Length: 222
Image 1: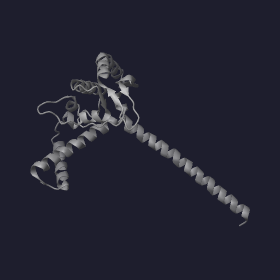
Image 2 (image 1 turned 90 degrees about the vertical axis):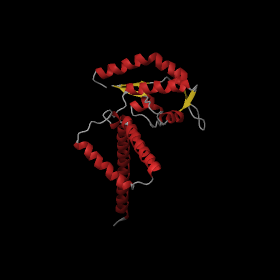
Image 3 (image 1 turned 180 degrees about the vertical axis):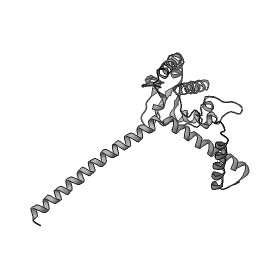
Image 4 (image 1 turned 135 degrees about the vertical axis):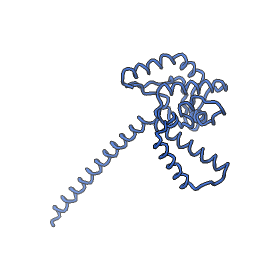
């Protein structure tokens, strides 16, 4: 093989590898974007599933604390599946916590935020971090009392970004707080939400926000 021919072959192979690399990056970006969009659109479902897992682990933990190692994990999973089959055979109605309502509706999110802020205000909290908000969601329920966290299956919700405080109503994205209610700080200092101004604004605009949400749902876009 002549030297010129060898150079052309190497150049062709290099171009082909570059093309494959560029195609791979495009596919990577397209797939990542599609999965990220899917997760974002179903973030409430992910939160509900996480709540269910946490609650199941808590039930097992409490039983083992009380009764010891009553069964192996494998035996427990088999028994759970057997009971699920029994429930399906009986067509037993599922509770709300059993996911007839799996999605966190915009109105549910509005309700729970009002409950949360009123609770913080009652504790004389002027500013709260995202960590403190997550701690509020993870508080154990009071005996004989259910609040929005329980009624909407949001107990043990984990919020990792401020986008959670917005809702999709039809084609609209409605922010449930105003920029002045959020104090952004540089690490290592945590950013905070101003409790009382945020609560005051939400209470003043609750009816307006609820109407906007309801209007989009009635319009068939929700």
